[in-house]
Image: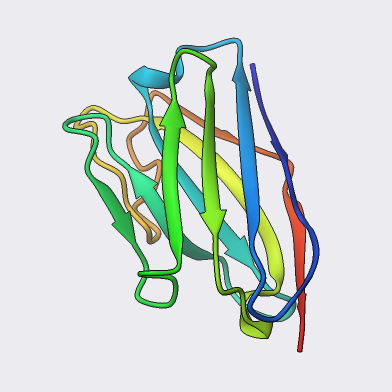
Length: 130
């Protein structure tokens, strides 16, 4: 069972990247999915998630309108399209999948609480230069 994140890199301000997270060993569509990031010296920040109750997507204010989360259950992969990247987006980005009783997703510390399973990818570095 694992999540494999990829797609990070170095990009100039205003550029774009697409992160991918490939799931193996479990059924992705039975899980809420999310993307989180952590910059040096800062706490982990939830930036986007999709619940598996009605597939609603949620975004942090800091990325609303610039980032788009999507999923391809047939491929067992989900994505984060990041446009108009800014230096403050520099961080290690992590993907996660959780099987919660409610099917809801959370961008805060409630993520994964009471989940039967809670998987995390290894992180991929995104660096945005000014």
